Amino acid sequence: MKKFEIQIASVPDRENLVAEIWLGDDLICEINNENGHFEIEFYTEIVGKINYSVFLEILQKAKDKLLIS
Image 1 (cartoon, helix red, strand yellow):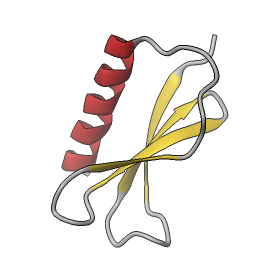
Image 2: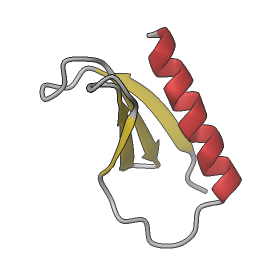
Image 3: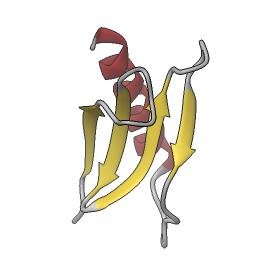
C-alpha cells in the first residue's frame, strides 16, 4: 500500500521553502506560501480514491511542517 510522505524542499522556481506531498513515487501536490497565503499546486492526476479525512490530515501536517521550517 502506498503511503503519503511530506518533504520540505527548496525548489528553483520559488523564493521560499515548499512542502511536497508524495504518494509512493508520485508527487501529488506542493504547498507554498509565496504570496502571503498558502496555496496548493497539484502535479498529478490521481487515479482512484483517497480518503478525504486522511488527505486533509496530511495537508495540515504539511502546512505545519512548512511553518516550522
